[in-house]
Image 1: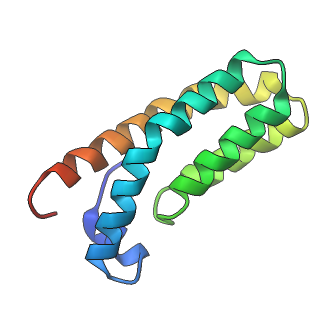
Image 2: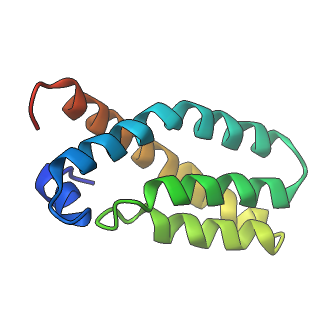
Length: 114
């Protein structure tokens, strides 16, 4: 998935300062969201897996231009319905994409101006 600062800003009403602030919050919250998700995967509790995905979906959903909210909604639904065999392969595919997105966002934020 490509990364576009102008689109990111547009998603938040063309307010680049707000986009930068929200992006910083997302990057700062990513480690704890990721840890929560990984912990939930070690449990036999599908509801906790769904809850951790829901939290991640909410954090990423601030930027409507990314497609993660849709993907995570589908995976969350599978976990809620006990369909781990359908959820896990999709999650294994999307997690590296999310990590790449967060990495690019973090790199962008480390620059003086987007």
